[in-house]
Image (cartoon, rainbow, N blue to C red; front, side, top):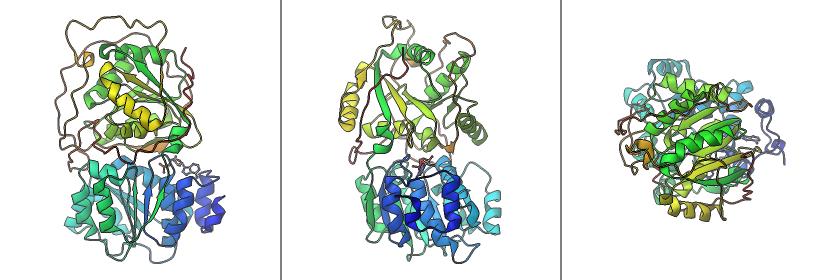
Length: 465
Ligand code: AMP
């Protein structure tokens, strides 16, 4: 089946062709027809499945006719990076339509946003906090909204945004089309679906897209040897671009610095960065000037870099579900990727639940020539013990973007194993959207329900020697 089956307007097909999409993904096949027919749709799909185009294409089709200059489609996303990513998709797919989209999120000046709203936009992609600021100041009018999209609803719940969402929805006409996308379906999201949607058509794709093309491997290692093992692994692995996950933002920062010191083109992404620095890190990762990005789960949310060849879990994620989200960053579309996870003895329960979700045992690997017997440093340091258990606190980070790739090896400019330890991290209020939310970095409070990763698991060792 091709895109022609959807009978999209030639101006929209021009966008599909410009992006080189040949065949619709499963979520697109299932979701586009009912959305085009103005049904409410509840899509169970995670990032990496093509869900953005699944709602963007029918929205563009709908908005092609009718009034311009009024906000007719409102898309709400949990993070500014995801908002930017959706906005970019709208611009790319809708270029020939002349429909105008803009993003709204905090941490950047409000006046340029007000200016754009005054000029007139048909599509707004917003994070909840700043959108509420605009609503409260009367700088946005939502009375003409025909389509409301809640993207990554489970993440918005995780980040404590549901009260904001409910407040926002009061300002949107009751007569509207509502599309809700979520990777999982915890009870609170089920409740939200009942509140905001009318007889929604449910479409569902397993997490097959990323999982099918990703090979997984575990590297058992003591906590204090993780950084050494990481350096060794990088030395012996052919990579395009690598996303490394840590459980805390402090660790993300430190490892980013250590990699840089060791000569790698690396950056870290965590909540304490200014928006400019954050954007520079993301842009650099997308265009290949950084080959390694170190991030926490929340900071990495929505990162869409199509050429990520390796995801390395320096710290195992808190839940099996978070694991599938992390590896969803590699092996996107038809590409393949490797997911390496460092595991300590304490991680065994989590490993078992990840294996249950993946439906098979994950290969354990040992790095040849690496000294696993090296004892822990006398002075206990941040990196010699597991990170603190996740704490709920009012913090929202801000992830993402979309992009291209570089295809060279992440080889260091110079050798050397950086050492040095910093003080134990203090939880500090990062902020994104000016608002805060009760999500700790690296935490994932989602339920294990609806974890349906399926697909082949070829645990092939690709390039480790
Ligand atoms: P998403 O799940 O919306 O974040 O999309 C994941 C990636 O797949 C993005 O890089 C999209 O540009 C890409 N994509 C979406 N639909 C298609 C398609 N039909 N064919 C090829 N790539 C696609």
